[in-house]
Amino acid sequence: MAATEAMEVFDTPRALSNWSDLHRIAGRRVALVPTMGALHEGHLALFAEARRHAEVTVVSIFVNPLQFNRSDDFDSYPRPIDDDLQQCRSAGVDAVYAPVASTMYPAGFQTHVEPGPLAGLLEGAHRPGHFRGVTTVVAKLFGAARPHVAVFGQKDFQQLAIIRRMNTDLDMGIEIVGLPTVREPDGLAMSSRNRRLSPAQRPAALCVAASLQAVADAVAEGQRDVATLVAIGRAVVHAEPLARFEHLEIVHPDTLLALDCIDDQAVAVTAVWFGDVRLIDNRLLLPGRPA
Ligand code: PAF
Image 1 (tube, protein in one colour):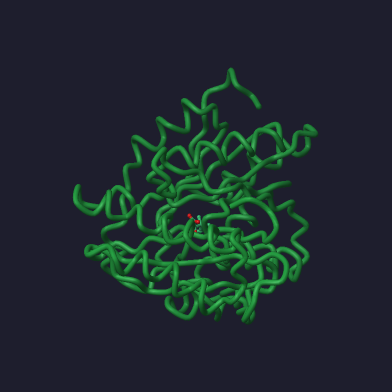
Image 2 (cartoon, rainbow, N blue to C red):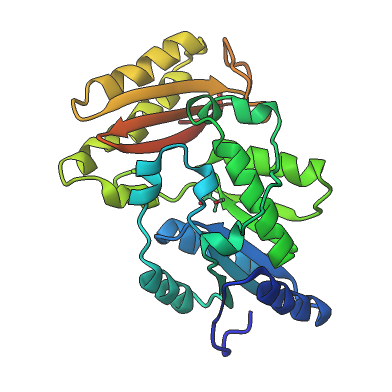
């Protein structure tokens, strides 16, 4: 990466493409890390991973209205842009792409990327249109940044699977890298939404990772029946008065299809509400290996 040069900040796709093309022509690999800002250590881990795969890294910061199915969630999504830019600078990011919504979706915009059946499962069943918004904006970011490689967190497990599918199906030819979820020392998965938790909700939110841990422990002890495992995980959330259980499902990690019984590998995915804050998390379940 060009560590000695000042970080560039772009707000149009043309300016970003020009920057990317110059690096590509010079033989440098370009990495893209798409984000919605409110950066935390989980994002910094993505930036570090990007640097392992490319000479230059661009981070996009855009709170994408298309992927929010609740306007209150969109309106209250944190947007600390000055702090985000500072964090990018400190992390040695080469460029930031931070367009406004009217640049991303100008008047007359009408083309969307329609994901397939993967997008109707799990999160998709609870957030209609969400993944169509994600695939559309990620396709636009890929088009503007022209990256060789793009890095995403595995906390959004289904999102990663859908983006991999889009990349393959639409011959985008980008290397898609997924990075394990970064957690707070107490186990809470890092998320921009955590900062919206009240002081009372923050400790309560530990029940999300604890419920997945309970499921993983039960698998390690030999339990294979999915209905039983879901009941074990759900009970942990139900025991927390400030939590409102939404879903916990155990699916195949590639197809995301529901399983009745765990034979080989599986993934438990969950969403839990704390007031109006919805947190998601997931955990790979590997029978025969320690939890
Ligand atoms: O994971 C996110 O932060 C967003 O869904 C993404 C990939 C940046 C698209 O808006």
